[in-house]
Image 1 (spheres, rainbow, N blue to C red):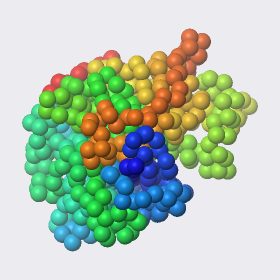
Image 2 (image 1 turned 45 degrees about the vertical axis):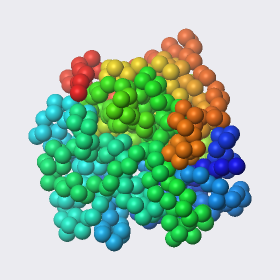
Image 3 (image 1 turned 90 degrees about the vertical axis):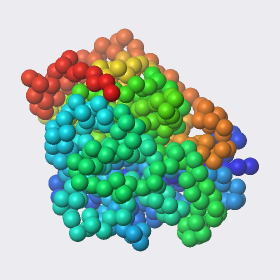
Image 4 (image 1 turned 180 degrees about the vertical axis):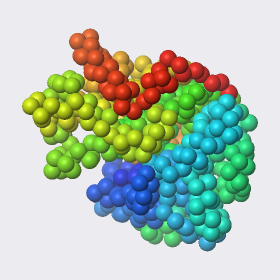
Length: 509
């Protein structure tokens, strides 16, 4: 028997799954820590985590996995890594981490990215990078250059969070083209490093790691790493991808027109496109997908709402650490639309879908004589869904056909109310599968290690658990509630004169 291991390096926890290669069945899963990892917020709109903590939790999770399911570590044919996107890890020549990682929801570099977007030219950026430099990794690195020059001078290589974990496993400093694109280090038009942006920021391309293929043997587990993890030295690390491209891969979303969704700490809808397109306001973003080739281009158009599971987690603390399934049951006691209560879930950094605006979450329409805890919980779940719908409308404007969405049976998609609101307000069909990010990373490792001959062969054992379609009566109720939500968003956050959904134009590379 051959095994595959998948690591999911999140901002809340690290998860590892053991997959049986032949059957595609998850044999065991472990997660560490049990309580969510802290995000350090030294100043408003900052968000940092220590990369060394990710590594320690990967070690902890691996040992828990081995305790729960004894397996011969020499039979592990490949290790895959998926990770929180857009983070910035800085390494010196000795391999030492120079500062805490600036992670995905940190907003300190918004102004720098917006300035680059204007000065390089919006049309130039959207044609070449398919994105505004915005708050992505390249802009975060520019912030370090401007504000921590002595530290910047010590940088040998930059890394994404998954690159760091792979480095700890192999000793190799590497990244992928998909990873470069997620940091706006990639020029889609030239199919090369985004040298124009690096030159504008005054950053040498020598700081970028070596590029390896997403599906490939990228190194082997060193003796030191194997001892720490309790695994077999020489095991190949054969896949790495950001969490959203990997989530799509885990759901067999590889071809144009296929759509994946996830609703963890943040909420994402990710659609595959074969053309190089960009939203004129960079409210949704395009990255290189995991199965992209020169002969068959595959890009992922990504909608992200930062305030998703983190809002539900925040509410859980307020209601006395009530289990999530009980919160879902309580929320379902309130009617569709929560009797006029509207939750805007934007309270976790700059929201790309709002053109990188920094805005707080808000709860409006409160009536002390009507609204209960159930209404608040329902309004929160509906508000998250409506924010995702708002982004899906933008994706449709950008040429992505959003009709059928696949998701793993995890996180907020475990909530029947959330699923019901998602399909009826968005007019989409939803398919739920028995998979998650760590399983996707394990399957990717099988492709990279040659256990599977192609990505298409990696999905043995993937099963559809549920299909849900809109119903006319619920559709009418939810779409009315969504219209009210959009009215509140327009009145309180957006400028009605400039934010009409009909004025977005498609930019072609």
